[in-house]
Amino acid sequence: MNPKLHEQHAKFRLQQKREKWYVVISQLILLITFFFLWEIASRFNWIDPLIFSSPSNVWGLFIEMTVNGTLYTHMGVTLLETILGFLIGTIGGILMAAFLWWFPFLSRVLDPYIVALNATPKVALGPMLIVIFGANMTSVIAMGVLISIIVTTLVIYGAFNETDKNLIKVVDTFGASTLQKFYYVILPASYPSMVSALKVNVGLAWVGVIVGEYLVSNEGLGYMIIYGFQVFNFNMVMLSLVLVVILATLMYQVVAILEKFLMRKRR
Amino acid sequence: MALLTLRDVKKHFFSQNDVVEAIRNVNFTVDTGEFVSIIGPSGCGKTTILSLAAGLIEHSEGEILLQDTPITKTNTNIGYMLQQDYLFPWLTIGQNIDMALNIIKRKNKKNQAYTRELLAQMNLSDREHDMPSELSGGMKQRVALVRTLAAKPSLLLLDEPFSALDFQTKLKLEDLIHRTLKEKEKTALLVTHDISEAIAMSDRILLLTHRPAEIKKHFKIPEELRERSPLDARQHPTFQDWFQLIWKELENLEPETT
Ligand SMILES: Nc1ncnc2c1ncn2[C@@H]1O[C@H](COP(=O)(O)OP(=O)(O)O)[C@@H](O)[C@H]1O
Ligand SMILES: [Mg+2]
Image 1: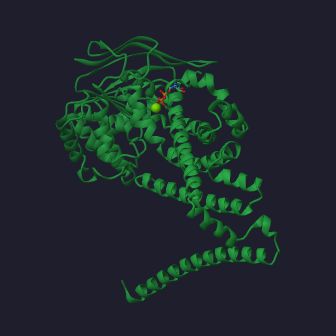
Image 2: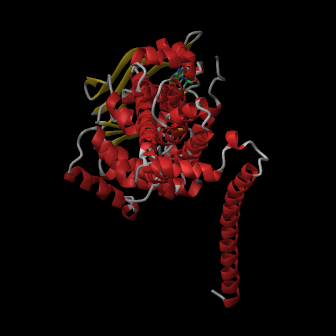
Image 3: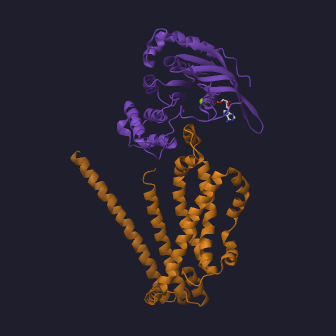
């Protein structure tokens, strides 16, 4: 390469790198400012410290609950419920979609009911779940599943049906069985839809689990929020909220990385 | 000897409000080792005839025989090549070809070696591990041919396989496919709306009417064109006469009735 171009390229790269750093630094500053202002506002009573708590109080509670071990239990329970709700909702939705694809008659019969179920705010069914599964963790997980499984079924079933007819014709000319058609064409063709369903379902599972814990639980981060609210311990509410934000973001990132990994051969 | 026979074949399509008469009455045979083309205006029922012969759809009346056996479902003795390559975009070239062997449950070392040999004859050996999106249209159609030949069919049904290609690629591919099929002693039934392509490649040409399809005319291509490769045939002095003749017949088709 000619030296002048080379120099320009180096300059360009430096510029890009610098801009990237500015973004990261700005993001950090924003975060620190937020907590700093929160602390100051609380100390000087600009906001009611009893309601809005303060970073230092939240931190104090965090240390306390970490030391006595209760925080691990709450976090563990919520994480377990969310992961189970997410997995069962996603896998169950895909299985149901496969079932509907396999039995077209059944899918036509069930169509209006699935649409109705999808339109129903699933949270409204919470009390029913408690009656069915009892006031325990199963109900919470069921809430996480319920909120994601119907929409997953609909989206994946739609993807199955939108598979290019000509790709199916190709395997038909080789005399493919229904199972072969599903395995070799329908499933891989719908793979991107399934992977993007993962990302949507992480968010939905969190909604379901937190709401589920509001309703029945005596453990978990959702429980901490409701309990803290009832006993007017807003340190606990805030701590739980911050943890939910952090954990949900982390889980979303993990799924995003998983998505990249699963899609590495596709564009 | 007739490999494929269609006798008094009729086909209607049904929908809630309509009965579409696609094939009125079609009679023809394709002998072993022959290359026969069907030409006709678009929408006249060419793809329907191939789908019937492939056993993909059922005919309404008449008889369709492969040698002496009625064709009722798809059969590995019959290969079908679609208008476009329709390679599976998520599989490599090699995997695309292996899929055919997987579906007919004949994936073994010997058959795989056979397909790789075909791939080499198509000048695509070095592309085995590439994705379809990395190949040009002509290359992909060559891969699709290998995939079709993987099941070792004796009869090939070709549905306008060159129509999506640019002219130069098309000419080269005509030659390559013609040579490959003759070498392997395959019988072929080609559907096209391109008169030159039909003359250049075939031993016989069947001209269809507008829908509902019937065979309007039957042309036997003379030896001097048949013995030449498609590219050379196009240069032959009589080629143009044949083109004119068939062109006129196409022009003189009754206008569409329905
Ligand atoms: N599955 C089907 N249902 C109803 N009509 C069809 C169907 N397939 C083809 N046809 C009709 O049959 C006629 C012939 O179609 P086709 O064989 O695809 O024509 P070509 O391949 O010659 O262009 C067209 O009028 C088309 O609309
Ligand atoms: Mg057609």
